Length: 454
Image (tube, rainbow, N blue to C red):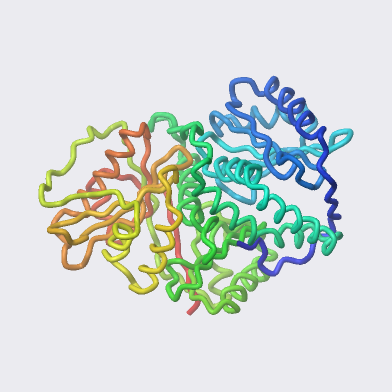
């Protein structure tokens, strides 16, 4: 996993110092200050990063993860943290409804990472910390790499950080599968009743949910390169199918749009990977489509953003005795998930074999396959994040269409989301799926657009 895509070197100085026994005490004192200020808005506080690992050399920064009850309280939280001399909150480079701020103390700097309860980033950070702490040989390798990189890139914090990415990804993957990992994380916030949601919140939730769906497993798969930098996110599986290679989450100015687009284009050309560029409603600049078209891209797909009010639905399911829907949790059922419909059979088979190697029961994504007479005929996945259930990848095998299997799979996942306590389900509807979703009662609220090079 890399964090760079043609980014120039940073001039920030890198300082890695020996472990200091005062770090845990500095964390506790700061955590107490923050807890008093935020009160019931704050559910948990974790010490993360290298200063949280005993005997680990580190930059003199106390990284603190704040687990929020509800990200909707962010304005109040920001005000309270400002009173504690923290900078104004800004969006995390990992854009999963998360925020970041920092302050310089008298002897050390504090970095705050804010996530709503249930965020998969909480598990990733804490599992990494605990795994390294419990595996001395891993801690030694990580420490040696940090010291080496700090010496090599003393004036370039960006290269120091990106130099750790491959080992961090390897450790993340091992920590994710580790039997000794923490299990009792707080569940996700399933949100307010549907009638209380604003249009703005719906759109942001859809974007965040889609981002988790498109990047979650890339964090752990050594075969996949995930690049998160200010301005965009790239995922490159190296497979010969643009289903698994894409740019998303554009956030740059119109003035430097051509430069950013060239960075993305050059990256995928250098990797020799076909790719698509997905534009969400809040992506910047507003005229990104025009810039893409001027750089040789064309609009290849327009999906309608839609939401479903689970509170207003009685939960009745279409009766279809011949269809058996199962949750895909291992290589065989995930292979069947891929077989339902594939642009490139080899690429789909390979990708879902990778998923099988890393999938656990605490992931925010669930895969489902529907069988008739032992044959996989329909599939769909559910992503639970940002207080909504995202229902993605509904597909029916060509030979099994117009028999109600797509509707049955959709209702099955809606019922699952309702049973989990969610009030809103969201999706991006293709032109083929749009009539079904309208019939089920989904409502429109935006557009997601795909662009590819001509």
